[in-house]
Amino acid sequence: MMYYLPSKNLLGRNCIKALGPEIESYGFKKALVVTDKYLNENKIVKKVTDQLDKVNVEYVIYDEVKPNPTCSQVHQGIKILKEAHCDFILSIGGGSPQDCASGISIIATNGGDIRDYEGIHQSKKAGFPTIAVNTTAGTSAELTINYVITDENRKVKMVCVDKNSLALMSVNDPELMVDKPAHLTAATGMDALTHAIETIVTPGANQVTDATALEAIKIIFTHLPQAVKDGKDIEAREQMVYATFLAGMAFSNAGLGFVHAMAHQLGGVYDLPHGVCNAMLLPIVERENAKHAPEKFRLIAEKLGFNAKTESDEACSTFVLEKIIELSEEVGIPKSLKELGVENPDLELLAENALKDACAPGNPFMPTKEQTIEMFKVIL
Image (tube, rainbow, N blue to C red; front, side, top):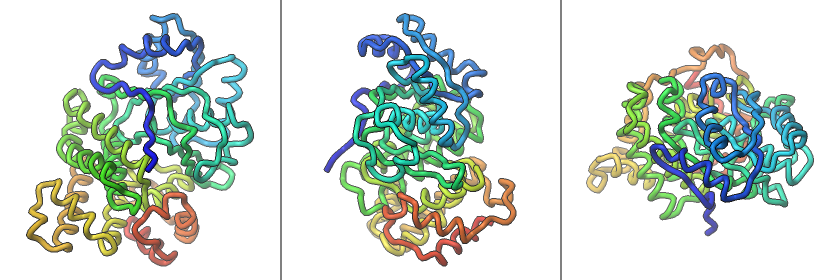
């Protein structure tokens, strides 16, 4: 078994204060800061770059990353990296800046077009040095070997699983997350839950990934509602940081499944928020998965306090599915695509692309095109 994780990981309250000395220890001189306009305008980026100023490390800010980053955004980042003569990348944000930074990192050392790297371990060389500062508790993009880039021409989210994209160091400080809006806290938290549950259900799971994913699930159910209700609750925020880290450790090394395969298509075609799509699809896909891997739902049920030893497989899976639905409702996840402004989705296209997605083979069973369409119909 090969287990991937950044070689250094700063974790917990005020750990951002250690960033400057760590960068200094690498000998880096100038960063390409990859982020988005919201984080830049709201001074969250400044909280990070202040640490660079303290150790006299220069930087240039690229804040054009949008939700569901595109191929053109990756290539624009490459252009700035080269023109500014940066010697490392500093990504600041949630999944979108982190994924864009991973794409930039791979192209910077391997060349070509980002479309060349769709799939599993397509690059030959280690990516450009990257330090990833996370500002959401959900995607785990700062510490995994997965990144997703939208091909705006094909309207497809390209899943890239690449050991060479792994960051040198991840930073998870809950103090950077206290101003995150409730709806984003909910979406990213449910994304982390999806990671953890899909990791347990996938055939690629093992004892190590089960242990971290199960603990992540317990923490999320316990602390996500409070983090959504009161974003200033630093204890809830810190617990969600731990959950995200644990779930990321798990899925980066075991894989994901058909929830992500379907959610990627909604993001690629309709530019919908990834965490929300995952949350909406999670109970639908897992209801089918429970028929094929009931023992996995027994593990989850027991972790959530259900007396799994004396109950049937069906009772365990029903308990887990009901808990997922209850949590989604409690944190305010939309229930239909109509609520997200999508009235008549192209179900044929969505299903066809989901079946081709790199996450699909990680599911306990491979649905047919017709089954996939029926699952999409549940959230119309």
